[in-house]
Length: 111
Image (cartoon, rainbow, N blue to C red; front, side, top):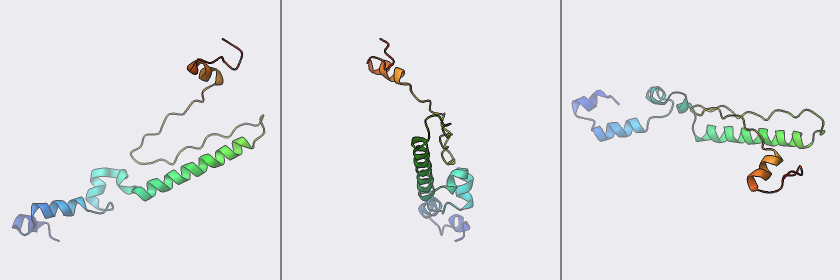
């Protein structure tokens, strides 16, 4: 395919648009337009999600089966994905905060 055919009148604007829109994600144009995001398709996102869930499952298993006095392992970090900002660390809610939110007596005997 010669892109000069567009200027010679042998390649319609519609056909050129279709060719550009269906370029493979490995093409130089797609990489220039989208950067690192172009490297990740649905398969890579699904695999990263599966790895993240497996890591959390293993972490939960180890945490649940550890001695109460043992140091708890750190929660696993998700696989970094291009174009997605790293989330802030989630802070666990205390039973007192939950009770206050729902308007119930706190488990510690307050209220």
